[in-house]
Structure formats: C-alpha cells, structure tokens
Amino acid sequence: MTTKKISTKKDLSNFSAKEGSEKQEGANGGKFQETARTSLAEVKSTALERWKERNSGRMSAPKFKKIKDMTVTLEVSGDLQQQSFAAETSGSADIDFFKTLISQVTSTYQSENCEERANYSSAFMHGLNPSDETEGILIAQMTGTHNLIMEFMKRAVLSGQTAEGSNDNTNKACRLMSIFLKQIETLEKYRGKSAQQKVLVEHVHIHEGGRAIVGNVENKPRGEGDE
Image (cartoon, rainbow, N blue to C red):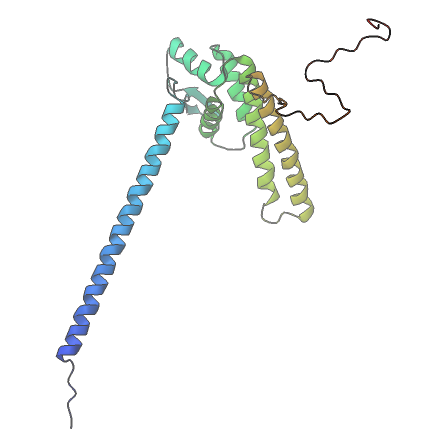
C-alpha cells in the first residue's frame, strides 16, 4: 500500500500565493464598494444642495394631517403661518382660496389616503412656485392634468385590460400630455419666459445688377412722393 503526500513545499507556496491573491481581491473589492458609497453620498449631497439653493428663502410645502375620515387640516396653527404657507403654495395669502384649490386638486388624485392626497397636491403646487392667484389657478390645473395622465396610463396597463381599452386610455393620456405642454407654455408666457424669435442678418451679398435694402421698408401709395 502506498501513501500519497498531501502537500509539498511547492504546493504550500502555491496555496499561500492563492490565499494572498484572494485576500488582495477582497481588499480591492472592499475599497471599490467604499469608494462607490462615498461617490453616491457626494452625489446625494450635491443634489440636495442644489435643491436648497433653488428654494433659498422659501418656506417648505405645507403639511396636512388627518383628523377624521376624508378630512385633513394644516399642521401649523395661527393665521400668519397659515397665510404664509398659502401664499407659497397657491400664490394667495387667502386661506379659503388656498384650501379650495388644494381640495379641487386632490379630487383628481385617486387614493383612499386623504392625508397623502393633500400633501402630494400641496408639494406639487409649491414646487412650481406660483407668484400670484393666476399662476396658482393655472398650476392647480396643471396638477390635475398630470394626475389624469397618470390615471389613464395606469388603466392602460391594468391586468386583464383589453387591447381596445389599453389603446383608448393611452390615447387619452397622450391628448392630456399635449394639454400639459400647452399649460407649461402658457405659464412661461405669463411669467415672461417664452422664447422670442429674432432674425439676425450678419452678411448681405449684393450681386451685379441687384439691389439690397437692410432696414425697415415703408410702402407708400403709388404717386405719393414720386418724382
């Protein structure tokens, strides 16, 4: 009967080298994960700082809390605080105007959680930063349009939805998307941000026998001013 040697110096050397390589790979993997976590933390921090800079000097969106079935109330108390939140969200310091707009918007959002609906609607309108009642009304309509877009898109992919139903809901969502883009355009135009097209003439080439006029041309009736 012969006995086979389990290991030799060479085997032990190879084993040690392999073990060292695995440890190094593990260390490198750990360093990569740590670097990835650090980079992600930096990205999150940068995004948060940009958001804070964009909203510098503004109050946060008002929060609602549920007090009974399908009824919510503002978490803040006092007329001044409520008026400030109202102005930031609806463009008006009038509490009734603010609450009515929020109520109208929440009715277009399908959810059994009334607190969630109110806080979402408030955050949406606050994010678009209305500066007066006109902007507040338009932004409330934009919020409702967006809610309906998402509702029809959800219906289009419901389990068991027919091809006809899916197509019908998709078309409705697409039509509402066009309306939403027009609402954005209207808001920007009202805010004076709509782009104005300008034509800039940099070079004028006049060929032999031709004439060019650069400037305003005023047409006069025939015979007036003729020599």
